[in-house]
Length: 193
Image (cartoon, rainbow, N blue to C red; front, side):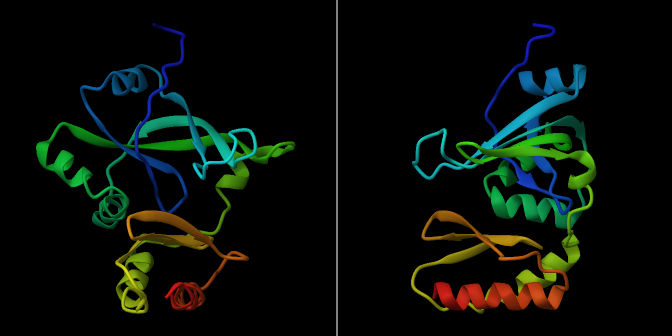
């Protein structure tokens, strides 16, 4: 239906520039739509069970384009979505990235604002190779009960899965140096144990 938006639900992970990545079938209706018109919007919301109007959410508006990911980029995506390995083995699935133009962030009722492309492109970045090295050195830090799986680390926090539940651990301020990020993550993991 040309001119009408077509909403769908799909998993995503962020790349090192904090842009959403998707692994989607070449045959999917939404893939065909994106090839015809790359303009899209992604709604991300907190699913902590609170009322929908009081939870955090962000609507990202931008252009979705195909991308060839590095081995580190694919590994990062698969840490967040391990089942996607089966899709990659099947073939006929490709990675796409949403390049944000603007984003509307809502922190709760009456607390909102726009994030512009220029602001998005100047955020702190942790290169994928440095994230990989950090993950290799940090996984032994946790000694608490239950399994723990590190999903990803960036300058603003890290994502972890413990006992099947995923959480985002935010840093109080952006961490700059890799050593600083590693130390902050280690302290979080010790506290979690």
